[in-house]
Length: 156
Image (tube, rainbow, N blue to C red):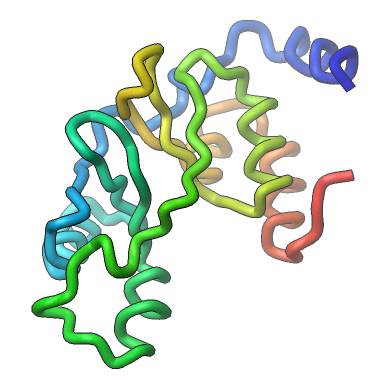
């Protein structure tokens, strides 16, 4: 597997996730209201907002989290807090991670977005499967990863 990964990385040159990520995403704290998070999503035209404590990522809140964990459960959007609906199990990558490794992570973990951190584990960006497909030469691999994520089957 390591040899396979090295061969893929050699074919990509020096393409790292920092080359395609969206830098400095807008964030919320776990104490912020759901309305705050939703307003950021609307203003930034995104479906995800990183949840931070200081500069450290502690979770993500997505439009789906709001629908499934808040609206569907009849909670009040005006008073509910981010901590009540955010996803706490977050897989982040370092900014120097090769694109192929991030695609593999997305495919295996069935995720479409990944926070990007620096050497101090501070949030510096976020990358989506769409960012990789539009900002890199990885279109074929992205297509395969999207198919696997959508079908819910691991990359074998």
